Length: 425
Image 1 (cartoon, rainbow, N blue to C red):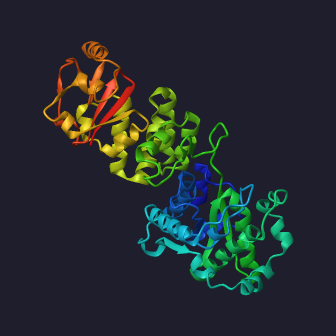
Image 2: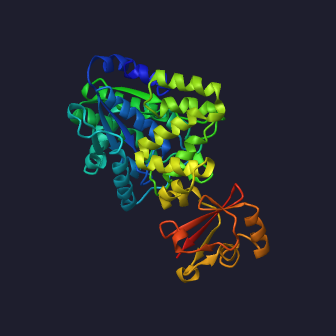
């Protein structure tokens, strides 16, 4: 399959300007996507444009990732019902740096003729005077043309400032600048950007008689129509400090069968044959969640790397499978704490356990896992207590520093589903 055929099969193609497919099939093309620095981290909704750039590069074309240092100061009205709050220059610089760092993980910036390029539109917009911009850019596009765009029409009733109204002109000039300086003839992005993209192609045609093209991917949603990438905790971020690799892995594991069947095409590079074979096997035994497991594995490895993937898989097996004491000791404490986020935790001092303390006293005097020593003893004798994935039957067993994994914590299970952490200060 050529690039457009692959994007179409994967569900990554919605709008495409006439002649785009022919151009991509004929010669290497330079194409760009812009990322506005509204946060210091991208989220999984941004994975769609990232995948577009990665597919572009894998098919031999040259990707350009644009960090919108200038456009981020204005705010894109596309898909927004009201004016966005403007960020300070300091916050924008911090966000730009974070996004640059993340994008470098997905694109090859050293791959010869089609090595990726990272640019910031603040570099060419910061010295562009207002009067020069009006004369050199604004005169080429009529107000009627700009108001016909959906991103503007949808805001006319609620109100749109001149600042946001001018956004499509600034984005259009980005396309013109990259066309001139990088021979960039293709812009890609989400379907909500279609109006801005065609404005850019029109500006190139009207100013220098050039021919430029655009294609978009659909905005990804869940099968039930709700917004993709949102959880009860908020956005699912690519930054491991904002969304842990374990929580990231679990997001994909918890997708529905219908969503997993779509997402595995969009967010992985598995071949059509592999995906169809996997979908067939999943339909025979859906309880094994083969699609979700492979989806979670592929995307977590892509975003966080092999080691974090293995840690997330170990934590999943430990909590939901048959992982034992050895697996627990191999697990990174940070991953375990993330997996057990929200479970009751207790702090004990080194001197409190120095020389040993009975498991019963630990669970009653130093924590409130059991309300009384009598209940703790009965529960332990009946085999219901698990300490560090090992069953405990002796209520007088001595717990000391050696039981605290990495001199940090012990994990207590009261029955099968009730977890507790006792951490050592």
